[in-house]
Image 1 (spheres, helix red, strand yellow):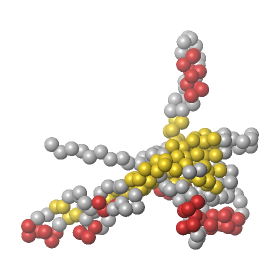
Image 2 (tube, rainbow, N blue to C red):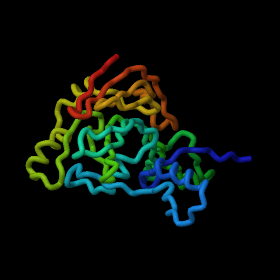
Image 3 (cartoon, one colour):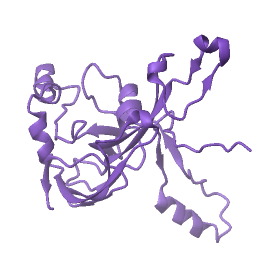
Length: 250
């Protein structure tokens, strides 16, 4: 019989899922008693996060769906350095899978897709006109556990950026973010940032994000062939979260 081909897909809404372990452990201890007045635990919470302003032309919903939403992002907890700061979850890299639709054109026929129409009706053939894109990512984001907000720490390919709060002067904000949009030296930058990847290891050590290995997209991959070719990576990089700069260890 026909077999259903399994595939991955991103959530329609990039939720944050949170579970208070301390609350759960205390509730478990209380279960041993007969205190009926205790408050019920919240259990898992599903939250729609906010986004600190990236630029004035990107609505928060677009940033969540098109930039933050992903699978296999790795990182760890960035502990607050003072009482004026908050703990943050830092995330690097991962995989974004998307279905790209095209017009009904035979020149854009995708390998493996079905063709309908035969014989004298061949001129009316209908082509399945889409492909699945698998894109490894190389950016860094930080999620503030108190403010429930994502903050962008690098641009799309990993170069550190600074994004001012909305209350800051607009001109100052533009001066800091224009570097990402109008950077003519981006080819040189690529030598100073890790290659975009997924299935990697990552952790936080103090104010440093450490990443190692993973899978990078083979540049020879043919999107129209219906699959993505991958390369194993064995390098290690350290990202200084305060300076927002990468350093290669090997």
